[in-house]
Length: 122
Image (cartoon, rainbow, N blue to C red; front, side, top):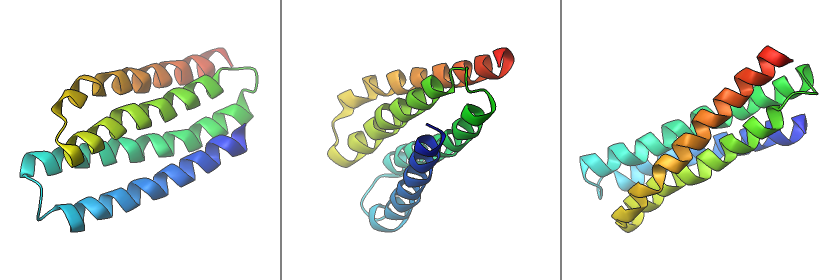
């Protein structure tokens, strides 16, 4: 499981870098400053939580009987829902997706809580 989360973290971090470059170079001329900021928020949280997945991989090896794997899947879900909804909102103009974004934020928060619980109980 530790290899899975480390690999997912590395892959998702690479995707975040690519999306950040896409936003900075390809979208800068076509998006409003507000939409560009929204896209950048998605990239920032995407990247933070890709790195967090690498932390989950370490935590899994440290506290094998903990719940680090739950934190990891919550971080993955958060990236898909939070960042994915922001990317899709900006690229398609479907503003209703803004209502979905907080679900991803809750997944991020839950992931951090579970990771802290794993460390405290490990």
